[in-house]
Length: 200
Image (cartoon, rainbow, N blue to C red; front, side):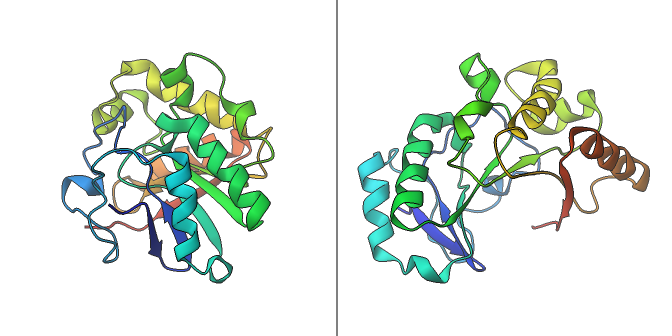
């Protein structure tokens, strides 16, 4: 099963297929792999030791970043993800990014932002839309209408513990006015705004 895979100049870590959302635009609804990675559907969740062992198979020096992002929400296994982050920092001293829906506080019922301190360099959060009702329509989060505000609260909190926070939307899915509102939300939080390219 595929635990680590390459996209561009980065190495991606696929540790879970669990996710509290069922986003209408999620790539895993239309494909099984990314960039000839092989299927990212896991037979089971790998142990932390199994994930660490996979790094021995790659030349880590050639990657710009290690990115936690697979066919699931990485913070569903936040404790284990952070154990792997600690291993990466100690052994390779590489830049680490976590791509997340920003709902870890709802998953665990507490403020999770402080857990990222010293282990994660960049947190990239899917903003998707400036509107909470539309956000729920798009993400179909199991946590309901409160998900949007929880995601923004997490973004604001985690900014205190990591060097860079990015909120993203997908190109062509929003109007210019909606993108402007998203940029305003990011400015208020102190996060960067990124419009990522649409992928089929």
